[in-house]
Length: 162
Image (cartoon, rainbow, N blue to C red; front, side, top):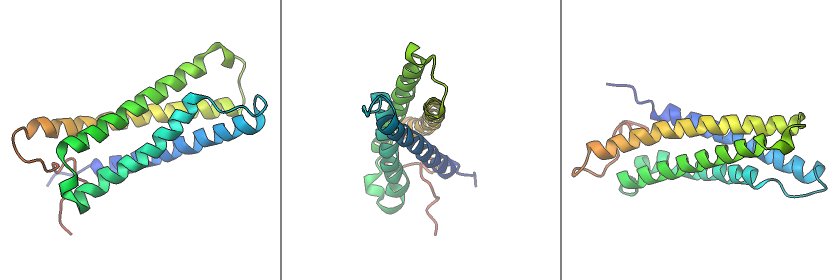
């Protein structure tokens, strides 16, 4: 039997989402408390906070729906959640990268800027991870056209045996 590497990918996705959430929340806190006289944090940073939280909800569905409620894990629903999450990460890391590269940050060298840069890098890797799992889901959808709507073994996080 082939090794199912979807669960390890999901664990890495959850870990990277937690790292991005921690970094962006810290940057928002620093921005609010110490920077620019208590202004709100940049919207690009806030969007990555939203994307991290969305990822935890999406991973909950992608991991537990096929195991506990297979009727809710329709192949198109799984693909839709994958694509939406992948697009969120793409938009988030691109927006933050553009914000960081803006001329206002040419002088920024402290922990605040390092936190933004690290969050951007982890968000880019998170996008790559979701691109990989989206491709797996899309392959399943195209391979099973006209057939079963159940998630494939490659999309499921376990093989169904206890």
